[in-house]
Image 1 (cartoon, rainbow, N blue to C red):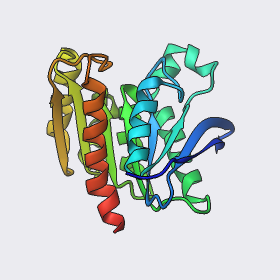
Image 2: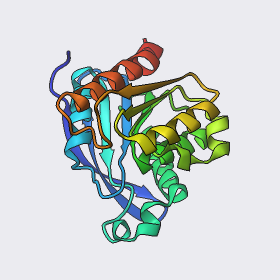
Image 3: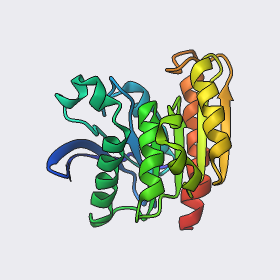
Image 4: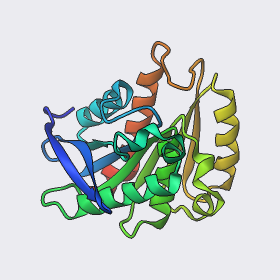
Length: 218
């Protein structure tokens, strides 16, 4: 366990727009996880904030951010534009690497459509992404090319009651050639609102990131 993270509101330039984010860095953090949330969510999402806080307690930095502007988030076609979301995530990744004092090891935590954007961004990123965790992700929307060429160790976490998303994850999982793991949380629905479900997600994510990010930096 680590001390309290230093939390800062940040602005991130991304191809002509400014993205809003919340950066949390525990003392001595050597890894940073960038969050890409799903539709209808934001950097203030209680679920992602909970997972981020657990990662902070494990000594990892986190960057919660909105990949879309408020008006963009009102347009369904834009909310599901994986290419745009991946491009914004790539810009945020580049911004991180240009800031002084940032951890060297980077990972992505993606929820719903944000998971597809994470896979797409990592598959084409000039900056190595050390690990990806997907929570209830529509990873199938990343596209066959991104799934097949993704080099990043990837964990897919799906609720056992989220039948349609589970089927899509099983199909996408078969296309991945990177180190991978598919975890089904029994009794959990898409948003992991059931007692203990989100705690399981946070624990699994922390273990995956510790394995592929923290050990890589030691």
